[in-house]
Image (cartoon, rainbow, N blue to C red):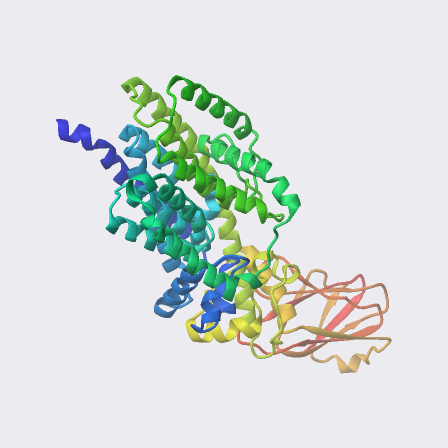
Length: 550
């Protein structure tokens, strides 16, 4: 029975990885491309140096761009499933490498519990469920590999660590933190292994400097003295948010922003316990300091470039913060033996922490699902209106119903959709889409076609000219009229202001209002012909009689 007992934590790890993979795939399967991903899909044509190396905000994302382009080339743009599966792979790799690192320092069961906390860290739902945030998960996976390789202390492992640092840097600025960790490792081992190893740090930094001189220096930066002075507060909040999220006591809502109400006192308690522990067992291992360098550089670099939306308590920053907290705890607890009873208590605490995190992950997935409905509906409207849409037509928040589609305009989207496919709903799928998507498609279509009205007061025609007209309004309240493309005449009898509103895919509501018309007027409503067979429907709300003439 020794083998099962010895390997039980590893079996548990495999089970946890499988469960996490199933959960992430199930939650991510209904989703489509979101927010910043569209900047890569639409604003970086071809494989030129500028397309690959142009910074995203101030970050180097060359490998992320190359990966996205490869996936689109192979699988097309109809589905985001390929990028979601790759993202899931990086999350699983990070968790497995975290387990490997932590189990070398503490009981394997504690390592498994730490890994479970990371795998199901719902507070970090933006990283867990949004493939664009591979700029966090890939550098973490690469960085953990760097730390493990540096422990082996041989030339081949140093070369591997150098390559992983380059990989991490190419996915995002978080990779810099592990370069700093490697630099501390080189410094600490200089007496035993010499300065000849410095090349493993110099090579990634030189490559990064070349990129910065060529492209990165033109990016927008936010380094200010104000940010520098507030960086200690940012660091404290970042640590508190990570601790509070790992405990399950602090939550991050669908806004992506949280407040570490529990995390702050918990962090103070943790710091106090760490000081007490150090007084009882003075000294830390040499591998503690590279982790400190990585963690400090992560939060301080983020603090120096802070702008609203980049708070230390943001969901996407929680993931890396949690990893660093776990690594620091593992170093401080290195060699500690835990009784069976202690392990049972720790396991119960882990389960209690995971439960609210799972609820947070579900809430995040629901939010992204709502955004996916709007994305598919809004882009469907652009495709339907492609015959008459202006090239400059953009999905601004006022039109799109969400700020996440600001990178999409007709001029960029339509050519890419024709070449690589589109995640948009088809017209038939729109008739079966959630109500929010149907409503938004109508709103976007009304602006994209666009629908137009021309009202002429005091211009009623004789009754003999109304042979092909439908009587609505006062005589027929609530009656909608089916419209065909082209021009429709709406006549309003003398009386008060009449309201006109339209729907097409929406059911039970008329989300497209117009200016309406005064009494005793004629309005010409023009509907351009488009690529969908579904008709429009007009509702006239008026106390007096009105006529809709085809």
